Length: 406
Image (cartoon, rainbow, N blue to C red; front, side):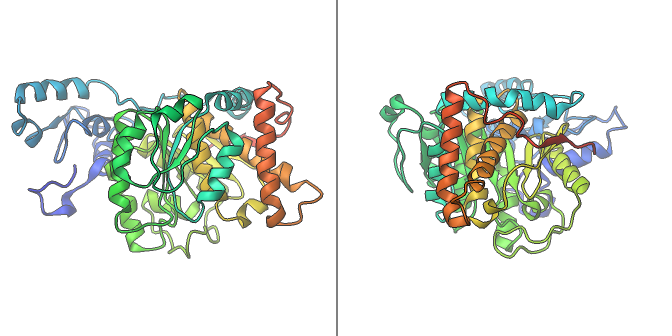
């Protein structure tokens, strides 16, 4: 399953993705019992059982050696394993089948989810690239009543929590266990990757997974270099992401297809049509058992069963650095506030964000990206204020959303 000190041939390490593929291949042979071995411990056994499951077959159990034999109390360790494999992880996705006119049904719930997010003052731990820190923080401040803001590698003190929620830009993984206890969410955005980034990401990812708290992954520039492609593989093997968000090239790289090398973080010319994009988002969500958002002129959102296309937004968003990255933080806000339907939470965040962009771009004094940014922040604030008062007029007739059958 995972690499261990005794297994030097890493080519034999298949992870949950490889295990799921094997289970799919033998799913017709229902009498074949299956177990997995290698690097499995108390911290990852529930994820192994959950993410390895194929549509028609799951693991029957796991084979454990070191985590039991090296334990101070092997009997207690074994009992804990037996308990863990029989219960789903805290981050498990609630399965939902698509309703007739699913998009219309979801749209009716969006204003209430936005109001819920505004009232929740959600906390988001941002491990985000330093190029966009200022813009993303301002977006978060405009959308939510954040009362306290800390900059890069800042410390968060629990007594500030009493006055409201806060975004924090904290790239140091050792801080994550303390921050995860604040019942917020984590965003991992690998825009400015360095030699220490992946180890810090993994520490934070595992801390939030342990508490079942939402984690958003934005694999910025995933296909640009070999280092980034390896980082994607390492992070997917290292923990669970409630949402994977990226442009077409990034999502293709996460899926594992032979995506063309990216030029920086931009998505580049699309090579897929709408149906293909929708299918890729759905298939990746099914494989990872999470929610996937593929951004673009049309956004495609899926939880593996439902596939929704969103056509809101404005082209100015693509001309301002950080607008894509901010969607990760916004998604973290909404996933923190509404955990029972992750797809609906992310959809609500996208619509609030993109309708605000449309409102800003329509202002007479907005003539380009430079004048768009302050108007955009103002419109996010206006929607937040209206939502807090129960005024849904900002949303009526505005959502351009439809179901996609794949």
